[in-house]
Amino acid sequence: MSQINTKLLELLYQRSSFFRKELSTAIKKNNIIEITLTQTTVESFKFLIKYIYTGTFPLEEVEPSTIFDLLVPSNKLGLTELVEYIQSYLIDNKASWLRLKFTQVYSTSFQENNFKALQAFCTDILAKHPNIVFNSDKFISIQENALLTLLKRDDLQIEESEIWDKVIQWGKAKTPDLPFDLKQWTEKNFLDLKTTLDKCIPLIRYFQMSGEDIIVKVKPYRQILGSNLWDDIITKTMAPNTSISSIILPARKKIPVQLPVREVHFINPSSIITDDHFAEISSWIDRHSSIYDVTIIIARLVVCPFLAHNSRDQPS
Image (cartoon, rainbow, N blue to C red):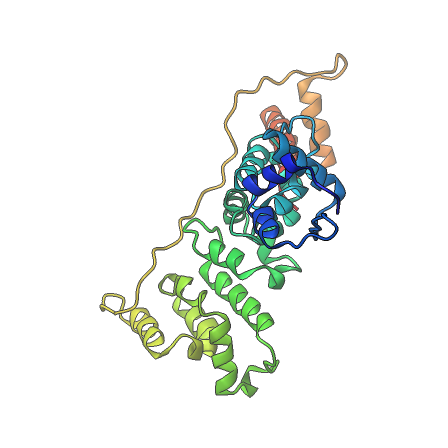
């Protein structure tokens, strides 16, 4: 809290919807206006005041963590252009950092609707690697809008029955007072779960699931679907050519995982042992019954470094 000169006061009013609201309703005490900012560090506030005052914000010399920490307070202050610029800059120039800090980035990006670019960045990764979030210990704590965004993806690379399992797991965790034993559930328990999963239920591709999965996994929770949808699922399972009233969502697209093809020239770094020696030693290490072909060793030298490099880039 400090006394602000007239010029800066005018800039704050013009460029920040937060300050415009606060200044319009603030009451002066001894000719001083006091405004309290929560969840904003002194360092972040200095950056933001400088941006408001100068209208520029060079990020080249700023650490990615500092830039990212500016996102939430920038949004709080209503600095829409800066919020969009920070997201674009991080995605275009600091993507490796975003992947390294994926859990933090993913959680933060869905806290506010204005972080659409980062939401898309994270969801693109999760569509290809859904187990990052589905198998996480923190899965049940993800925001509803994050889960819905993921369920809407046509390229979500996971079996539909597994998606159903995870949605049920998330819904049960978000619904209080549900008995552990499903046999003890009352009609109210099912209604409560249905209310929790109201936006998720229409996004499941029921008609792309096997009959066995429908019976084993979906049937125990059929009460949350509504009688019409459940009847249509059973009808389609038993008579696929029969027309129904429920919307049939398309099957999710499976994306084959392929290693990039690139030309490689293997150069033996040793002046003592030959390529054949490399092959023989490798077969000993792997306890292989026969000696490897030299081309297999070359392939290993190419593929293994590639996999190691990409595993480091994957979000944790």
